[in-house]
Image 1 (tube, rainbow, N blue to C red):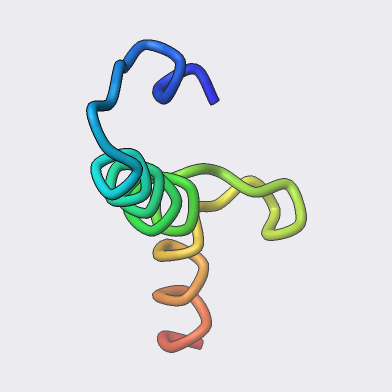
Image 2 (image 1 turned 180 degrees about the vertical axis):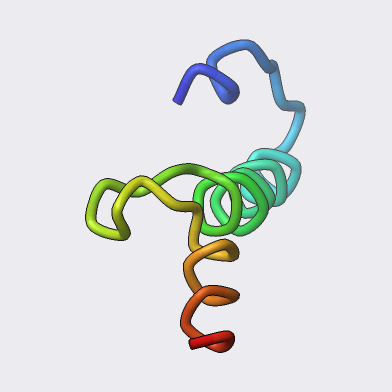
Length: 51
C-alpha cells in the first residue's frame, strides 16, 4: 500500500486508524473493481438499486 509506506506512525493505533480509513473509504467505496465490471462498489450498488 503506497499510502502507508509514505507515512511514519508514532503508535500502532495511528497506523491502524489510517489503514482502516484507507480500506473503508478508498478501497471498499471508491476503487474500481474488475469483478464489478470496473465500477466502484458505491456505483455498483446504486445501479443495482435502480434496476
